[in-house]
Image (cartoon, rainbow, N blue to C red; front, side, top):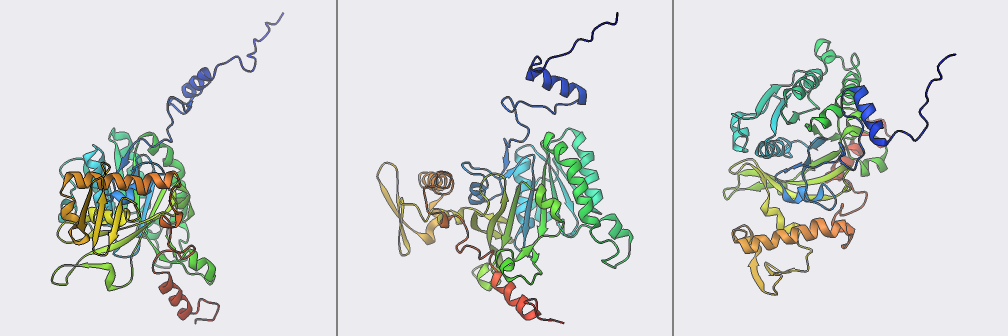
Length: 395
């Protein structure tokens, strides 16, 4: 008589046993209960150099670049992408994170990196990004070294696929090859990077959206190269724009350009803050990097604890005392610990708490005019009309 096969009834195996069985089958932990740990949760953030920007990235908390995720910083020309990336690299090193910098633009100078605070002698490696495949193959290799990595790719727009490099100069001969490589690489490496707590910061270019649809142009005046796979793969997209005018530049006392005023927009966020904006200045002479503290006054101007009367301001402390100061003396006032601590309290209240609890008018957090798009939209529209993209021949 044949021995009756013992069957496991549904529900007899505990969920803990199910997870253990699956993990054993695949040789690694792939099954979780999400109570004891969730591989998708972000537990660390790398500061960007702008406290205001860090405060608008994640709803309800002070954040930064999320560790273990894929992030894009895209911007117009000379909008400070590389300056911000260098600041992020320096801050990552302070957290014990190793930095791998992939440079396809061949533009990163040693003095610039060192002046930005990066330690070139420790936890730093620089690569010439010869191709898209090279970048991802190297990332895959480095994931097995035991380091906790921040990969910075500068920039996606100017990195070619091998087929482009080995072929001719006809853009039709290798159309969409780069986008297909990116799609395959993301599918292959997103989970391994997350499990290794590796962060990929992609720098990209904002380019004019070539379309005859004027409604689309008003809401989406810019596009980024690289295909849609990257757009879907990003957990966070930060776009940097600036005014096309002399007013966007910061001048020294002799009129030399030493920096630029930047508008930052959260284009995509899996942390509940898509569409939020902030402004700050980036210096490329003297003290290189984000001029962080100078932006705090603009961030808290809506507070009932800060009253403006022309050039003068009145700050109210928790104990009921008040202090007057001039806006021109702002950075000097921040040297006073009591004053600075109160300002940081108001930053957290105005930028983080009130947004999280929906306590203020939403228009103060998003674009000033709904549907207007980033600054420079009107210039893009003017360009499109002149070039004939409004439906005329244009030839």
